[in-house]
Length: 86
Image (cartoon, rainbow, N blue to C red; front, side, top):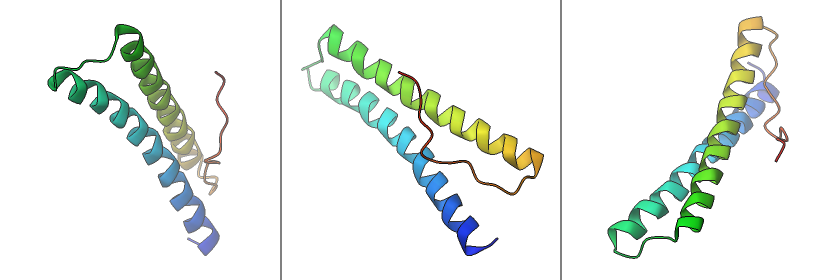
């Protein structure tokens, strides 16, 4: 791998791990608040779960794109700045 490819791979890994961290953080907040006897309102919990699912959907899309490129053996790394529709 060239230095440029290594940098792109690092950026890709950072991007996908960020998506997982967002989802985990939001779900952990729901859990910790509930365990402390101070649960989020139903509306806030639903919003948090929806945002977690969006992050996980984006993670899956990035991984699938990366997998496709690897399988095609193009030698390119997916753009970590992919924009997703709201």
